[in-house]
Image 1 (cartoon, helix red, strand yellow):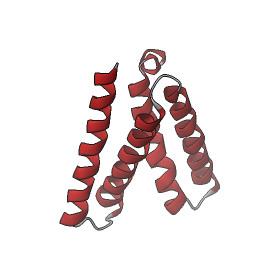
Image 2 (tube, rainbow, N blue to C red):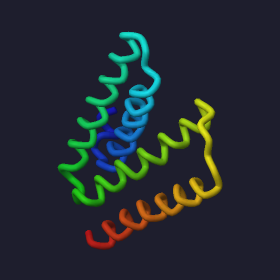
Image 3 (cartoon, rainbow, N blue to C red):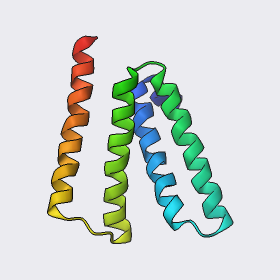
Length: 111
């Protein structure tokens, strides 16, 4: 785990996994253990985000964190919980993904 955390982009990706966990947990947690896991995911997600943001531009970091976290949460809702996903929503998720990738590529060009 320590190796992965040396790269701030890997840290953001791990934070996104935990972000999706707490967002889903807020809706579906019913037992005390589920709430504890939801809160642990929230704390871990933001802790990893803070670690990564020390080494990356704040705007790009936040856009990647929130954008990919939102996309992951929508996909989890669709794949795991049977939430609806229309073609229009899918198109906008792809636009979001292109925007996030574009921001990262622009950030790399400035280094």
